Each structure stands twice: as structure tokens, then as C-alpha cells.
Image (cartoon, rainbow, N blue to C red):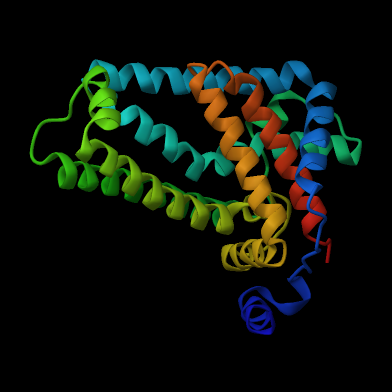
Length: 265
């Protein structure tokens, strides 16, 4: 704790480093309930945000199938978990404005005026880099288990993945590697993205604060990560239709997670 705190003090100034609160194990469900309350307060705006994300996701999937890269759809879907915190900035702003008693308009969430724009962009580049690394790792693992054959269609790939020894090997190893990368990205971004949106701090301070949040609240944050993964998987499994509700809901809830975990100082 003292080592991380000293690093945080050097990175962003000790007077700017917020304390991290410890929360109860059931806190993630409270964040989800508060997120639902925010979504109910501005349903048209929240669902419009979800619809926009649904259209973008569906367009990406259609493009992959057009280029006969349907087997990459599960890889890209998993990659969504890595960059999702950046994509929900508009929902953080909506919840911030609701909390402050300010009006919430479409322009407010579509063009968010962040307190640390360059630092937020830097963190976004880090998360995008992690997603590109994941795509590259997935390609290398496919080559390792399937050899030099061309990328199969999704109709061919799913049976091979589930019903052959090399397919099951790829599934197990890929899930383990992807899960580890997702855990790292979750730790560095779970509160750092809303923090950079709301505060004038540097990315290093925000990332270290996020890591300290996970360290001090390990089990509640693992539950929160499981909720995010489960809800996202449900949204994707419904051919992305479920993301119309899931994406803004998790965005609103993430703001409340940040406010509950990180002090104002």
C-alpha cells in the first residue's frame, strides 16, 4: 500500500491523489441498481446511446462476414471488454450530471467535455493497443493449434473448436490468455476512465488508483468484473440487441462504482 501510494504521490502530486474506500461485497449490485435508476431517469437518451452502439457493433460484424472473417467475431466480441470503459464515457457524464442536478441533453453525452482530454486519449490508446495485442495473440494461437490453414468460416470454425482436440486446446488456452489480459485491462481502467473524465489528473495517477482500488476491494471488484462479463456476454449472445440496454446500464453503474470507491480529495 505504502509503495503504491508513494508512486501515486510522485506521479500526480500527493494533494491530488484520492483515497480509495473499502466497500462491501454486495456493493456491485448497489451500483447496478443505481445505474438502472439513472437509466430510468433518462431512458430515451440512454437507449439512444445503446442503439448507436448496437448499430456500430452489427456493422462491424457484417463487415467481417463480408470479408469472410466471421471466425474473428468471437475474438472481436472478447476485445470489446478491453475497450468498453472508453466507449461508455457518455453514460458516465449523464450520471455525473444527474448526480449534480444538471440537465442531461444528447449533446452533453455525445460531446463530453472531459477534465483531462489528452490523458484520457492516452489511456484510450493503451486500451486500444491491448485490444490489438489480443487480436494478434488470438491469430498466433489459431496458427499454433490449427497450423497454416486459412481462417475458416464461422460455420466451420465452431464445430472444429468444440469437437476436435486441437479446437478444445485453442478454446482452453485462448480463454486463459484472454481472461488474463481482460483482468489486467479491468484493473487499470475500472475507475481510471471516469476519473480522467471528471478530474484534472494524469493517466498514471488514474491507472495506479484503479489498480489500488482492485487490490483493496479484490472480491467486490471480481464480482463487478463478473457482472460486466456476464451482462456483456448476454448482450452479444442476443445478436447484440441486448447491448441496447446492457451497454448504457453498465455505463451508468460504472460511474456509481467510481463515486463509491474513490474519494473527492
